[in-house]
Image (cartoon, rainbow, N blue to C red):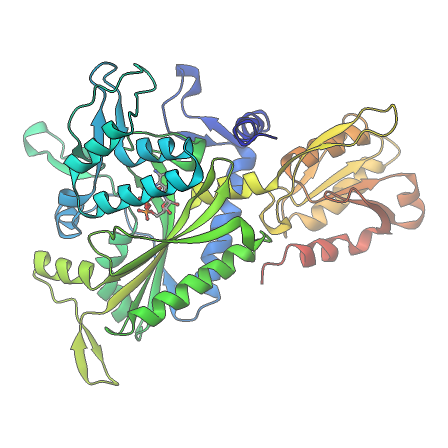
Length: 476
Ligand code: ATP
């Protein structure tokens, strides 16, 4: 399937099966904002839980917090976001359409032969690193890049555009003061660094993890839930002794890649991309890129942030943010290595990896299915229980099995339509196991379990189903 088609198929499937809807759809939607439906929210929660447990449960030196979205406005001065959190933009004078310069050049590079495209992107990286806006405009003009709407090359100068949303707090207008919706969750961790370190008696090296919403006024928001204006991040800041950040940066690069591979995704679907243009806070940075239907794109960033954030918060707040290292008998501001992954992008990664259209035709018999091959631990529903008929005590037996299993994992009961149709519906939402209760169950207590990916069926004792599934969905 062509990749563009694949993306469109996934979007359509997500809507049809209750995974993801356009926000405020009845009012024609809100661009780059999405709502998760009944299965999407389960999938997202399962990914978030897996990440959370991988960080906080599997590392005894990482704890989690849940900081507020609103923060004191000075936070964003200290972090550099007020001055630096902007992207170079260019407007087309005829269509008035605004573009992110890097996106415009990247899209053009894709239309060129490979070597030329690569050379163009290298040139772009150099100009971005040097913040050479005149050079960037010249590069767009030299390549005769046109606006997709007006089809002209009539461009404005390249300008910086801040991505933070702001709003007012205060009950009356005069008292109101402007605050920002956080563009990243990390700052909630930095300002709580000492609270957590002291109350948790944490010793360096240690980490603080958090998941939560972030907001960015993305100009060119496209690619479904890849780039949204309201999205969720899963971030972990790891506080280390100054001078050891390089080792920890390498450690977390490897650890995070291992986490991705633990989702059962093949290594060739990932690659690292080292940053040429480093963010204002970083001394090393890379992305983990995944092969999305639109090509390799960032899903996670790993950044060595130095002591930039804590030092600035100390300076702007006037509060000491140093740590006393008893082994060195020394006070210092720790260095930070962070891992920052987008939850929605991870949902999109899991969906694009899982989505498969299969032709199951045999001879003259036409058949096909759409299946979501989620890792069982992430699937929204783990077990569907299907009584063969609505009578003869079969529904009661099915309910018995559900009652036994539902305290442990999410189950689904369905008695309508043929078993074949019911299997297809479960395939389409990625349920790894279906159990059919039939008349034989009444006689010998056995059921048919059907495996989603292989479609193999086997007869097993009903009494063993709960344990069998628990073993398959175990994460660690
Ligand atoms: P990009 O270059 O794609 O804009 P970024 O480098 O600005 O991303 P970071 O600031 O490093 O992203 O944020 C960490 C993670 O948060 C990203 O790897 C991505 O998964 C996620 N993320 C960032 N912006 C968005 C967005 N607008 N929509 C969805 N996820 C996002």
